[in-house]
Length: 102
Image 1 (cartoon, rainbow, N blue to C red):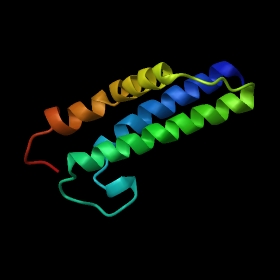
Image 2 (cartoon, helix red, strand yellow; image 1 turned 30 degrees about the horizontal axis):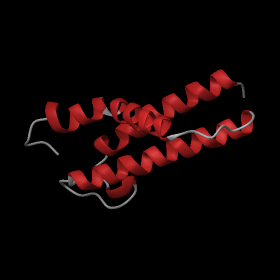
Image 3 (cartoon, rainbow, N blue to C red; image 1 turned 90 degrees about the vertical axis):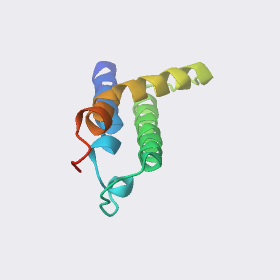
């Protein structure tokens, strides 16, 4: 796998993973269904998905070549990008969908 394919794979997986907590009514994406999932669960799922995307990025980077150590700025920018990628799911879950729907 070349570098361009790996980058697009991570970006696509990040876009999907950032929206999963808002689109799923299950606890931790695989648990039981709940009618009204608390925002704390969604934040926890968002953090777990961000960790999975980070792990995928580290794995692909180490398989392609040498893995470079990153500073806190890289992780802060990556977290902001991940949260931004989740904005369509947030809008659908909290702003667009009416209160009476589940």
